Image (cartoon, rainbow, N blue to C red; front, side, top):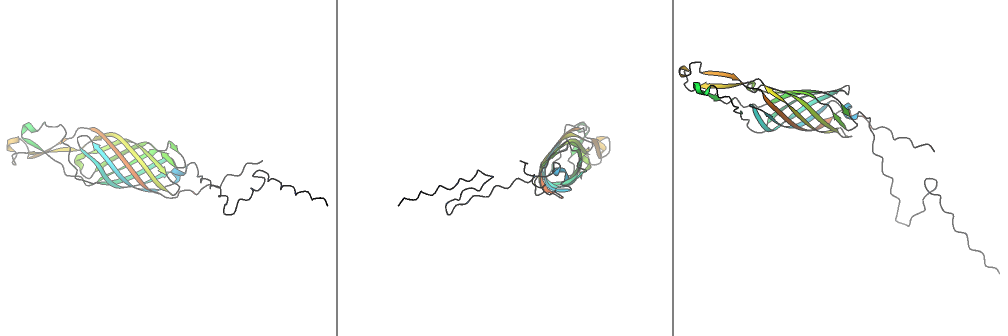
Length: 239
């Protein structure tokens, strides 16, 4: 009797995506494909608004104050995705000292410089125009001002450059640099003779502080509201 011919081998599966992959040995499985990275609108960073941040600030105002560490908070908003407005306040983490400056014109007349009161609050605001924005980053340079609760130290006006990174969860991380001028304010002088007779004038006088360079650097972390939802996955290409 003739021996039957062996059965032909099974047909090979067509290559994906037209066919199914061959079965794997028991205990193995094909891992699921990685999920695509969520996509957001191109202006998601500036539409995540308003926002609240905790801030750490270092600043130096020539002939006024210098404090490397201030801690506080800021609140801001992007108006129409074009204008960035922020208000902030911070308190010194250590005692502030009045920079002596170089004004000694009254010392020879018998007056002596007195340190100004120690400030316990810095406050200010900034306004900028968005020049670059993506789904997770915004750059809005502009102008800023700042003052302390002690009028002797005057006012700072500066150019500001804030960098804002915005995560998909609404978490915000940022850095802001400001450089400008500090002006206004005054020095206090006390006559060494409490009656003022030896100084030829009143017992206490004030003198305007000269303008000087002002610098501020700030780190912030916070949360932005109204972050947009992810866009739907892009459609598969037509074949």
